[in-house]
Image (cartoon, rainbow, N blue to C red; front, side):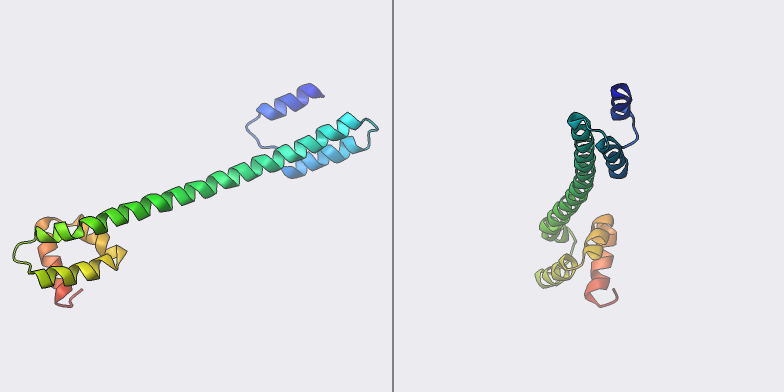
Length: 131
């Protein structure tokens, strides 16, 4: 039976909590204390594995959000410098455009996807209310 337990540990299939509980209940009828303890250990191992998987998923999601936030913050920080590259854009126009663009992540992403010439036209449309 120990050989079967070892082969289950190496399988790619996860030992579910229900399987571990069933194994523990099955061994619970035995009068042997170590058999019952072994079943309890299997349940705890299954719970810990499930928790680790969920934690990994959560940390991956948080990591993606942090990276996305940092990228957006970098874009906002560099926006004024990018707007300065647009010829004939006054200080007042540049500041109004920056205020509108930094408040909208879709506009921020679009701005950075455009060439300098396209940015010039797009900012002009933005400031005149066409966008």
